[in-house]
Image (cartoon, rainbow, N blue to C red; front, top):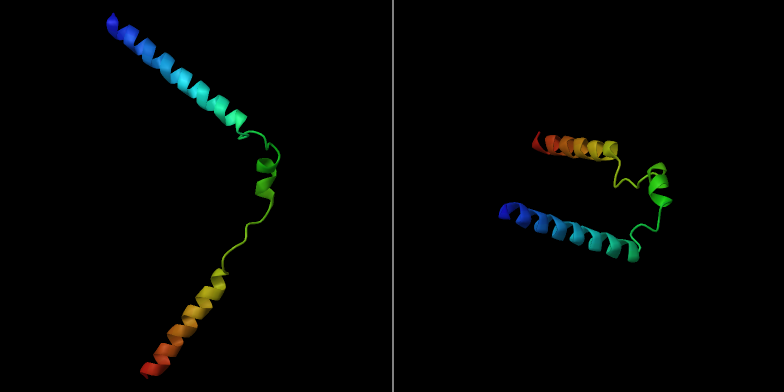
Length: 70
């Protein structure tokens, strides 16, 4: 019976902790911007480099080393 009381106390403490964290997140503005997350997927991300450019450069480098060997 004492184990149930300990588990209830622990669960209430965890619930209070999550409530405090939620209130802190609301007060610091974590949930203020509701528009941009829904539109963010519509914008293209900048890609670092074109994959075909990297492939042609690597094949050109390989051809140059083959010519040097011959």
